[in-house]
Length: 109
Length: 121
View 1: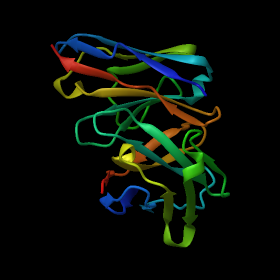
View 2: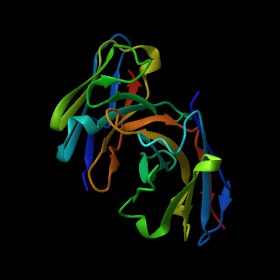
View 3: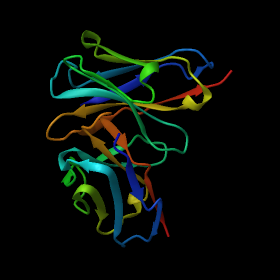
């Protein structure tokens, strides 16, 4: 089973700053099968990035994804107040076919 | 508009079987490029994938929960059903169903609102 480890566990930043979130896989993951989600309290997760770097419909361009192999990154170029949430990475394709990371909480400093 | 909606009991007793239904609209369960997954989230914890099913009846299950899970679909009713046997308090969680898109997305693009299930005697 592919284990996804996200770091840091909590990231404290101010609006306007740049956020860099990491997702490391225990085995190589095809870039086509790496996604990122945002979850706010009391809400379902929302797809942000698929295929490691493609933005989902309606996602602002301040969100970007990159990486390959075992190391992937979600970057938020300039934080807006609504961006403070929990972020999850997820891989699809290996057996079992789906695993999620443990999440990174992005909080206001 | 694509929507998914979970339904089922709010409270189940330990050792009972949980049955959850996901009713979808805006797309067909016969669409070969889409499937439906169940994902859960204990309070304050991370997401955990449970199972998925595709139009050709291809099914996959979480390795750790495989012996307790069964997923099925009724295409005519636009419903996907998950059963989980031998419920335990550690299974207390919000249970989500989500649409999974095959290539090129290969991710969960639409989620239901979730349904909270508490396991307690």
